[in-house]
Length: 114
Length: 114
Figure 1: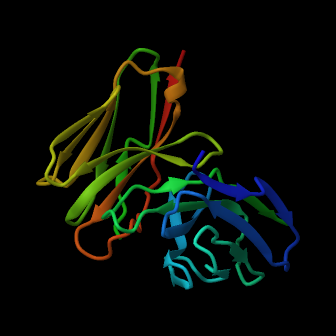
Figure 2: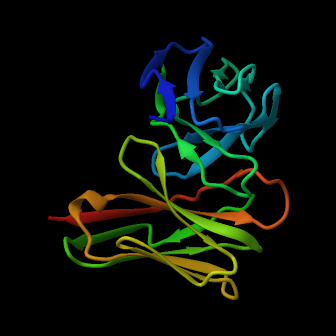
């Protein structure tokens, strides 16, 4: 089945450590996105990528970094510079050739930093 | 990208009743999308309505769009306990890039009691 896989589902880290969240898709989508969701709030866009080897900052990129070396993969690193990293992180993808096409989401990674 | 504002924030109904959620936005759109999120999971795309459409149906879902009022509504008929979830609208801006850099509000939390 085609879809987006995020791993792990739960992640625990100590403050001051960098952590990388995995996102893999087999939908052959060009565009990929990372969102952050805090309890009772909407989704905020962290980074997005339209094509391999290119990515853009979203609304809350500070303290995060990404790479897009392969079409299928868009890992997100939460660095120690991120002030409040504990959150639910969602990865998504979409087609580029279809204007404003719907997003396909993974099932998220819940990161807890103590 | 602009954010939709969903209303009400929470809705509680009995199984079999209809549920109506509303969405308002601020600037011209190409289309408007509705998504559902079950607790602890990713978002799932439900339906997309284009700016030149006034109503669209998909199974028990009915979406309306009034571009003059910059608003949309999602109606779920004959609701079931399995419809319990958060519902988000995402207005996709007219113009700009072709890929779906969407922004999501806080959503409407729907609870359907058996």
